Amino acid sequence: MNTVTGPALAIARPSVGLGAAMMAVLKRDLRVSFRQSQDLLNPLLFFVMVVSLFPLGVSPEVAFLRQAGAGILWVAALLATLLALDHLYRHDFEDGTLEQLMLQPQPLFLLVLAKTLAHWLVTGLPLVLLAPVLGVMVHLDGNSIGILCLTLLIGTPVLSLVGSIGAALTLGLRSGGVLLSLLIIPLYIPVLIFGTGTVMAATDGAPVGAYLALMGAFLALALTLAPFASAAALKISLSSS
Amino acid sequence: MSEPLLQAVDLHCERDERMLFSALNFSIVPGTITRVEGPNGSGKTTLLRLLAGLHDGYSGRVLWRGEPRSARREEFLRNLLYIGHRPGVKPLLTPLENLQAIFAGRHPHSNEILRAALDSSGLAGFHNVPCQNLSAGQQRRVALARLLVSDEPLWILDEAFTAIDHRGVGNLEQLLVQRAASGGAIVLTTHHPLEVPGMQRVMLGQVI
Image 1: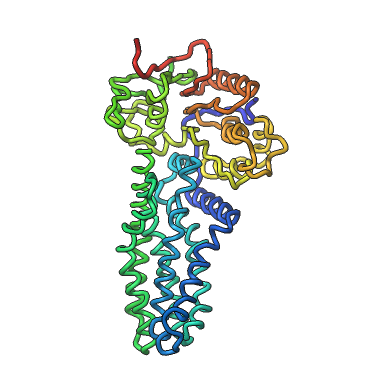
Image 2: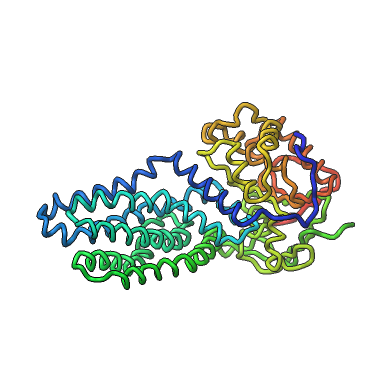
């Protein structure tokens, strides 16, 4: 074993830029996700199945579906996100990648943000893309489907960001899944209420600007605060492992 | 004697209401190898994680070049290479992708350099095999290939020799000695008999 590059042991040395470090995390996580495609499909299948069970289990009537459709889609999307959350840090924790992430010189919350973004791209975004098809299935009109997708596009990142705090907190626990749901679902409720509320308003022909602005505020809040909370929670979880 | 890189001052750590160590003082000076010794469960891993900044449940101080480590977090982390019990190798990625991912956030190297590092760690021909198909020793070698391209002056290696074959251990020992000779500082735990002249020992557990 011989060193490949000659050792240069100076203390001061330029650090890798923040953007490059975040891109590296994003790239690695996406690559890992695509090699584990059954994990990717799971929440999506869940989403489709829950939504398609409602017409069968409750009522296939157009009036009911049009009334309840937005709620059904939102609840299913919420539960599908929750289902995928446990994977956000679990594998990294088990193989030691998370330790290495914490030892990177860049601020941890930004690396956590990159991780959460990668997670959303493979779990949240597909839900948004599938939503129009399911929207047609529950007889929503064109305008409502557009608004529904928009609320999901704003709302699912909030679900991922808020969920990352819970995932980080329950990381070291053996039965973390149950606790995660208990911790996170109350925080999801406002997003759910405003998400379905927006679509309801659109169906009734009311203006939705204020609703969307509020959802945007949720996203801004989650985007700025959740990474800090997740990073702090990760430190605690790793410290006690 | 050059200025110490890392100093442990009056460290005290308890775990599950059991005292692991108390009033522990030592310095890590460039050009030395420090071996943390003690029986199983004596807190070796905890001490190494504590030094790396991954474990918070302690009292006392850890100084980086004479100043509190937390005040110079970025500088400290840029100069630290830590390889823990869990090697930080993604089973679904290939050895080359693993190295690329690790170095992209620290100090990017060209693929030729990373390939050469994998070759010298005995992974020639395995560059593009997912790590989950490699043996435990080979996975360990992927993590240890980092050492070959590392320019961090401080290495903290937890159980560095685990699952490595006899010849690999010899090569690794040689690498550590070379590294210390060229001014690096190394802190390690191992159950493997390692004899290096001038090695500092930190004893944990009941010392009789």
